[in-house]
Image (tube, rainbow, N blue to C red; front, side, top):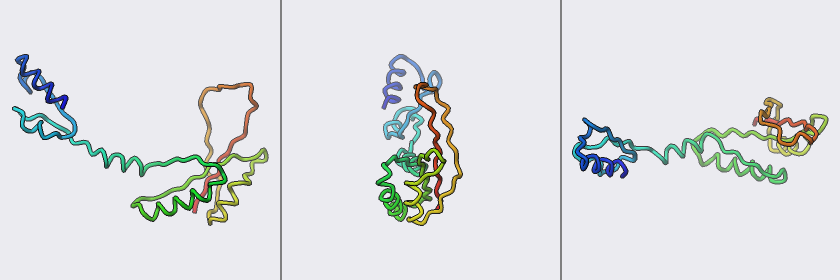
Length: 142
């Protein structure tokens, strides 16, 4: 509707569209079709954009105690949506590089976890007084 208002104001000031001023609108509003001349209007498929964005990535953080529950929920959702579901699980390792809490849950659910990804934080140091922690996520493939 802003484009329609701009067109009305342009005409009031003696400007001709599109000779003196080009105006385009979003949302393919019907009013843009009945102006003289009709205004260019783009139809933005908001629902489809949102649907596609949701298909790209969903990241959730849960306590270890809810890992199995969440994975089973993802399995249920996977049956209802027309998309590929990829599940990645990250967990902190102990000082020996082992992960002993999430790994048994994943194995019980039929996953064969593999160490296949390393994340490196490149942000600035906010608390240099803390000792450095060794973090290594565990990837899982079913």
